[in-house]
Length: 314
Image (cartoon, rainbow, N blue to C red; front, side):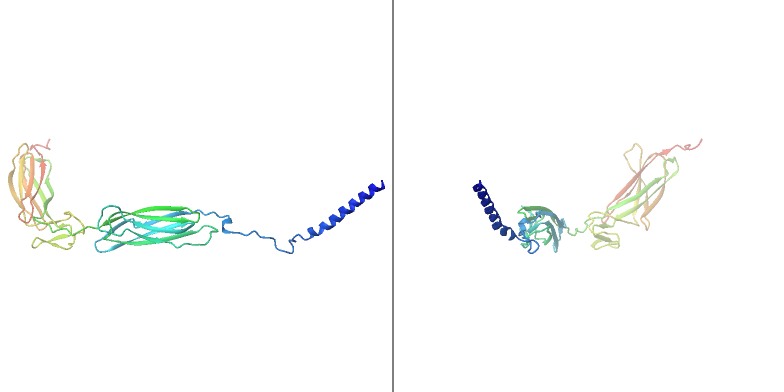
């Protein structure tokens, strides 16, 4: 019995010794109050921000390029990007025909930005080109390629239309100038049989053809701007009174195909004419200017109904 207790005490003493020996190991643990806490090294790849590479917008101005024979037009492309480290901007000519030879393309490159991203990175890049008469007409393409920090390659295209301004000065008008009889009226309508009918109107001559105007003294066309001429018009667009000209009056009875000459009226200084005729039957009254080697002829007409003498009386 005594031997067992002794053995037990020996084991207990050995256990206490082992614990005493292990205690210094716990005492050597780092003391937060006396030394800094260990730090985990941070690298860009371990950042919480994840790149979202994209082309935000591509603006091209102007969208339509009209080039004159002697001159040029500047076109500017502006590209806005997010999380992009490299951008190329090219403009490519139309395939196939067109006016002139032109250049194949121009390019612009944005320098690499080696810094690592810790948040969104916004960039704007602009590139300009000058178009002149030598460049092809048609649809050109502005092509954008962006290379993102996330490894993506994003592209975008915009188009511009290139045209040539082929306007040329129109040739001088040839031959006689146009005329017209304007504001022709026959009144009253209807008219009682035997009463007089008033015929009146105005004789006009074409004043301008595009940028050509006429000298009224010698009726010759010459290049320049008159008071009422406007640039770029390709048709007769204004009129001037024509005085001192004979206008013949004709009548065609209702149901007949023959015209009967009645009389002649002369235009006054403002191109106006007026005369009176006696109404005997319903029919069409016409006035006609025959023209000459410098002036084209013109005419106008109006139908008038003639009623009995007792019309309008009870």
